Length: 64
Image 1 (tube, rainbow, N blue to C red):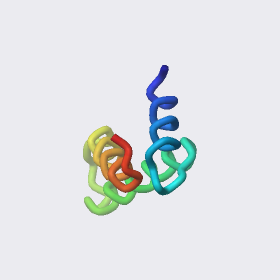
Image 2: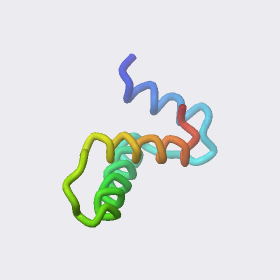
Image 3: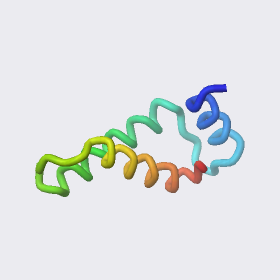
Image 4: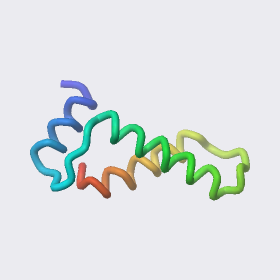
């Protein structure tokens, strides 16, 4: 079972807030962009922004 299937399954089983995989990924993209702009458009580490955003969105939807 791939990571995406695991996330979808876990969300379906445990989350009180329903979310699709597409919505989950879009929320991460939006948050990563917010993190980037919070740095003032400065060059930085896109991967670090993505991972921080993913961590925050997983917490929001109670995904481990």
